[in-house]
Amino acid sequence: MKGIFLKYRPEIDGLRALAVVPVILFHGGFELFSGGFVGVDVFFVISGYLITTILIEDIENNRFSIVNFYERRARRILPT
Image 1 (cartoon, rainbow, N blue to C red):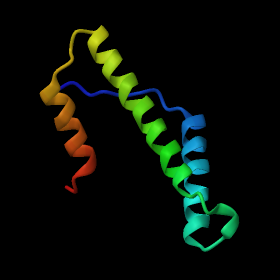
Image 2: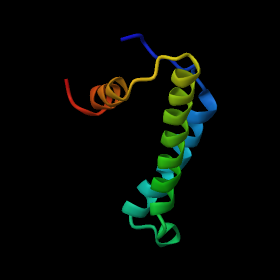
Image 3: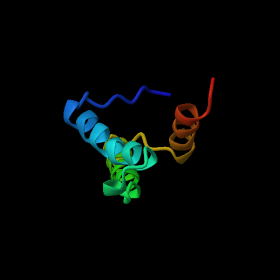
């Protein structure tokens, strides 16, 4: 399996950090942040963007495989 590497994007790390803040504040009991789920939604949108970018690149380079896609997801999520 060829390695799939996205160019590092510091702005995406910043958006992820901003998405986590409302969740932490919600669980900390701050009433102003009673909608902590919004941070979770933003985090999922960012993840979807990154996964879609990888899929499009694979399809354009004729190397897409559904098996490899799920293998990469499993390796990323499951403990080693």
